[in-house]
Every structure is written in structure tokens, then in C-alpha cells.
Image (cartoon, rainbow, N blue to C red; front, side, top):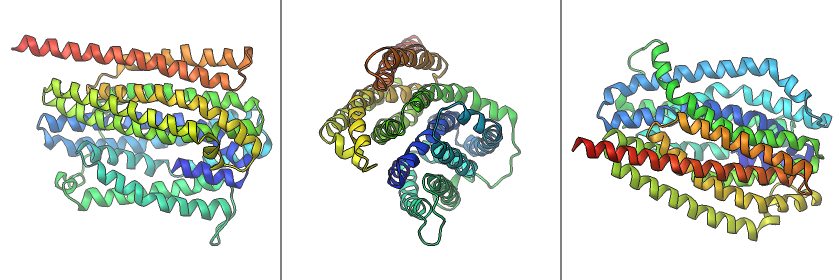
Length: 424
């Protein structure tokens, strides 16, 4: 959906593409950080199933939904007071700032249904029914494209909003996703068999805390990773609109390819969590090896595709020759970027399945904010790399993070192997 938002906004103009880039860079770390907190439901449900404690699942899901609403309200209120000050700190062209601001305002109207949907999706996925999540998203995708067409370009009687229209379209799509997912868990088996809403349970701070203990470290780890991309995009605001647009186009396409390793990471959280709950640690290790190998293979194919079709990829977003030229250069760096990402993401997913989240949060902070961003800033401002220096810094940070995560995973697996040996 974000891929089509960006492409269609770019067709409205370079300022619209740049505005959506700035808006997305502010929204993405907030969304992924909060979503990381909500992701705690996946290993919780997976381990409950593995431990054959299914009677506790309904209450865990309900408390997750309550928590998602509370977090959405908090984010919305904070946004009211901080959006203008954040945008005013950047040296943006007036039109770019206008698009960025109202793109975010439009998105903000849909965050409650978005967060609710993500909790329900965690429940669906934790049962191993990932095809259902895929069906809901695939069903909503053409709806999102239609809304984009209407509100970006002013079709079918809708106002012409440019990049702002992508935010309106996304909010409407989030609402539809939530409604469909609620119908699914109420009416379709095996979800209806859990009777999620059959009994009323009041919000429980203790239940929230159980999810937050796992979710907050996950959220911070994801926030540290995604916020560095946001920081880079904000640093990019010192360059001209064409450079911002080229950076966004390359980053957006790389993010599209990243959905493969990210999906594997989410699957590993469920599969590893299930096996850990059942005390089958050898199976959990085998899933981890398969997941990491598959993600790296996908990254090699993706990198080859980007190398061959670098200019054609950027032409999907814009017809501006300067943006195409710059974007094709950013694509080369994106190849190495996604190789590091494809290695680290599934390892993180496996560690979440073990509920090992605290140490990985510290690792993420050091890798991205102590190593990655400072090295990128130095290369961008004190060498001839210019804006490409930030991408080199991102690659260095991702590679460092992936390496430390691998050592952490090997340590956890060895620890479990020793525990099993001691019980025999």
C-alpha cells in the first residue's frame, strides 16, 4: 500500500513525492514502534497454543485491542502538539511542508482502526492462518489504489489533494481492513471458536503490563531501526527537492523488497514461539536456520533485479530526469542495504519467538544510533559522498546489528540446549 501511495504521489509532482517522503519519515518510526509493542501478542498466543493453554487466548486478544486503542489515542494527542514544531525545524519548501503536514493529519484519522487491525492480525497469524491476513490485505489493496486515484488526482467527484490524498486513502483503507478482520474473527472458524467477544472483560492494567513487558523492548528495537531511516530523510531535507524525491523512491522500492524478509521474520516469531512453548528447542533452531537462509536467498535475487533495472525502477515513481538519474545511484546502495536487512530481520523474528527482547533492544540502539547514523553523517558532510554517505552509514549500522543479533541467537540456542541436557 505504501508502495502505491508513493508511486501515485510522485505522479502528482516532485513536491508531492517529497512531501509524502517527509511525512512518511516522521510517521514510519512512530507506527512501527507502536506496532512493535502490539506484536507482543504473536509470541504470547503462540506460546499459549504450544503450552496447550488455549482458554487464556481470548482475554489476551481483548486486552491487546484495548491497549491498541489507548496507544492510538496517546499518539494522536502527542501529534497535535508536536507536528508543527517538528516540520518547522526543517528547511523545506513551502509546498513540501504543506503536503507533509496534511498527509500526516489525514493518516492520523485512521490510526485507531489501524492499530486495532494489527492486533487482530497478530491473533490470526499466531494461529498459523497467515493466508487469512494475506486475503484481507489483498482485498484492501485495490480499494486503497482506487481511493488514491480519487483523492490524489480528484477523480469521481473527490477533491484533488495531491500527496495529501494518499493519507486520506490510507485512513479509509485502514478502517475497511479493521471491519473485515472483525467480521473474520467473529464469523469464521477457527477464530470464532475462541469466542473473543463472547464475554466482556474490562481493561486490565496488569494484563497490559504483561504485553508491554514483551512489547516495549520489541517496539524500541524496531523504533531504533526505523527512526534512523526517518532521521536520514530529515537530514536529506537540507538538499533540493529532487534529491529528497530520488532518495524516497529508492528507499520505498527497497522497503517493498524488504517485505519478504519481514514476513519471514514474523513467521519465525510464531513458529519459534510455538516450538519453545512446547519445549522443542531443536525444532525452533531448525526453523531459524531455514528462515535466515530463505531471506538471504531472496535478498540476492532482489539485489540482482535492482542492479539490472535501476533506472526503470525509478521511472515507476517519476518522469523527472534529474530524479531518475539520482535515484538510480541510490538504488546501487539499496542493494547492499537490503542484503544486511535480510540477514538481520529473520534473526530478530526468531529472538522474539524466544521472548528474548531486552538485549536485542540495546543492540539495535548501539548499531543504528551509535554506529550507523554518526558514520553516515560524517561521510555525507565531510567527504565527497554527499547524500549517499547517509546510505553507507545505514549499511554499516545494519551490518553491525545483524552480526550482533546472530551472536545473541547462537547464545540463546546454546543456553536452551544446556537446559535440556540438564533435565535429562
